[in-house]
Image (cartoon, rainbow, N blue to C red; front, top):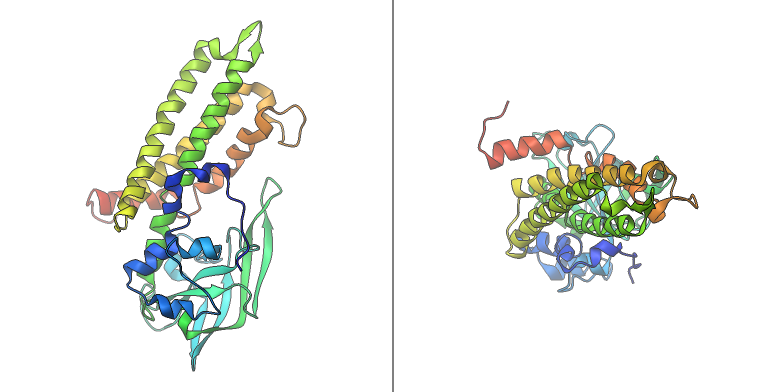
Length: 324
């Protein structure tokens, strides 16, 4: 039985299942993989509601020397009879310490061009030889991990798709991740809380909500939050139709990442010095949500592909501009 993971409040929005719960099912369906073969993986079941809802999992992509240049990855998967033996290291893996399964890309042909010798695996995190080490962020949270593979033996049935052709699946994985649906819905919730705060907080004898500068910033934030939601829902609509958004997902990620950072900054400035207090302080407004979001959002501009990578994708695949 998979361990259940508490879902953030923002993910209760019905559209977010397209990004979260349906990701593995969508990918396996598009590649016409045999569900019964997946079902043989240690009793694993891929149900209609999506594999990720049965067994919480995480993407294992980035490596110490393979971030933006993901195809430079060095983790090896060597065929040995009916198994693969995996050795290597992944980094910045969110939630690996509570995941039951991992989506892993590894190099299966070191002699092939770097984009072609890669394969895509679904691996049980309880496999002997797999270990994790926490990476503590600037908020003193344990969200990221390093994951190590030391002669980890996984069944051949863990291979999804064809051997040495996992790069397409990996880039599709990122397209789903970049849809930013959860973040867009979360931004709307943050705005609602900020509006309520300004209505209930008085400064120099009048409500914050009555100040022109505050109302202007809230109006701008409201327009941006709605635009971010629509961009993400555009991606969700394409996904629901069985399509794989590419530059559309990059547009959503690029806009929503910047929008959420601006909203967090605006919230902190509206609250004044109180908004900069640590979330554990008794004096911080709204449980320190805006201070935490401001720190967290800076890293999201890197995760899933940097801002520069998104602009390149939009330019080349969306606008048809030449490389370089």
